[in-house]
Length: 443
Ligand code: PLP
Image (tube, rainbow, N blue to C red; front, side, top):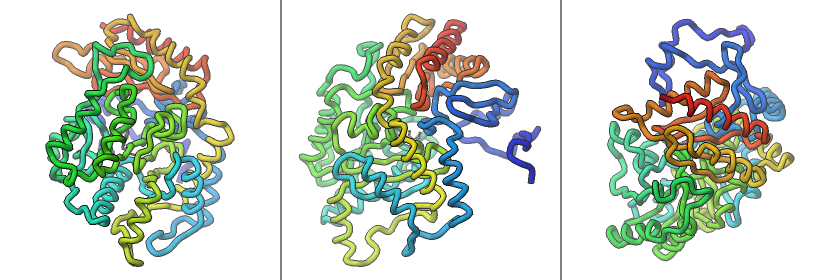
């Protein structure tokens, strides 16, 4: 077999059915990335592309990290695979210890998955199982939020709130309900950081509890900051109020931190940044810097203890994946956490946030920009949709940025930016300058 850098992209791209992609459109005019290092991708036509999205909210330590590559290579030739069903091997235990140290107080246990979607489905199942284990088996209802994105498993799309991700598939989970989303434009347009408090929004949970009765509700799941739906921020005090209502009614609170985890907001997890402790945290992506698929559910001590007690010495949770705690992924995770620690990347977004915020808000006044939102090293830029063609405007900006040398992400008519946490000020300038040019070149 040829070395990877010598394998050309095939002329016929049809065999790979690409995810979340307009396949016919893409294959007619492909954008192929061939390598990556630091803050940049290299495209097949030899251009250097500044990464404004950390891949897909994954590569927080930047690309091509030698330490991760070496850890993966060493592990794969030492122990390529071993099961974790009634067996063990060292690295996932070691990684769980490091994760517990990184997590907010009280998170003492880690259940491994392979992706964010699996982390979400796992957390939902743990919630249902725990309620049952403590004798509250009627609590089967799960509450998500409008515009929430929790991956693509049936659990995730059921509690998720993006209509396009749901309408083709129905919901296999009965009895799901949704909180309203927290985006309020034009009222909060161009707010820097969190919007002002709006107690009525979190109190919507009280209404759902009243409607369904607490005795029927197992858990609430929210993204502390919603990313994939287009960067939606919680108003001040919102997450704390959700916590209070959940505690009052015996409902578990799950934070889906698949994108906010591992330093994106300026603390290791959003739970620390916003000083709100959920019962479970789902994560993935930045856990291995995107290098090897791996996800995890971080679980508060008492939840695990209750499950152990209910298991009576047998299997306590009839759930798991062949690759839960995969040795190679665990090696990537350990190397990644070590980079984060040594380079203090899990808090770097806090230092960069002011500069980032100013750069993002410099786009106010650009053609068709109707809102800019930001927190930590995340920004959302919402555009007025083209009449009769929702999503087209942002897509055109995305293509223009790519041609000019920057990778941004778009969802509908919202541009979402989430660069590697190693980004420097000049690169922030470069990213927003390119974006500004692309915005001003709009029709
Ligand atoms: N949850 C959130 C908040 C996400 O942003 C994502 C992906 O972007 C997921 C879950 C799903 O993760 P994955 O694509 O790894 O399954």
